[in-house]
Amino acid sequence: MEDDQELERKMSGLKTSKAEGERKTALEIVQAAGTDGHCGAFVLHEEDHNLGNSLCYVIMKNLEVEFCGYTTTYPSESKINLRIQTRGGLPAVEPFQRGLNELMNVCQRVLDKFEASIKEYKDQKASRNESTF
Image 1 (cartoon, rainbow, N blue to C red):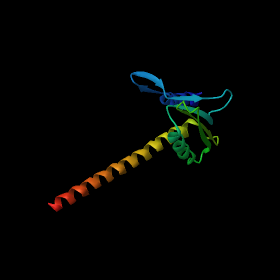
Image 2: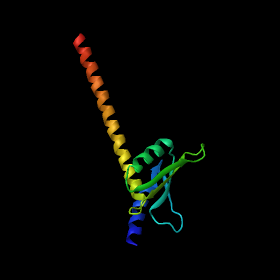
Image 3: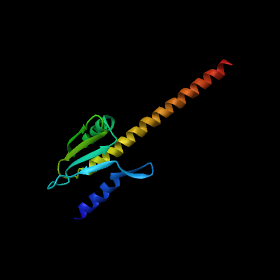
Image 4: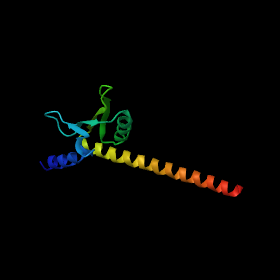
């Protein structure tokens, strides 16, 4: 019972996001009747292959995850269906959260390196221009 309450608390933090002053569902967690928490399906709205493929890759690096896959819905809808199945010792929402966090960290590292490279380029360009005068 305690585990169910903790799982629900974690999931509730993932379900909605603020958009244009109104509360909008960004994530749906689908649980089939009679299944345990080791297999979960997540519907991510306003997302496509960019997030789906990257997220599956990051999640599958977790040794506790047995399966992770996604599908996109009809091309005119921008949402993906993500399914995660763990080996049994971990609820499916855990690797989902870890995957999102790890993917955000990777993106931040790439952004930091990119910005540092731009700064280095501009500094080199400025020093070349100063030395010619």
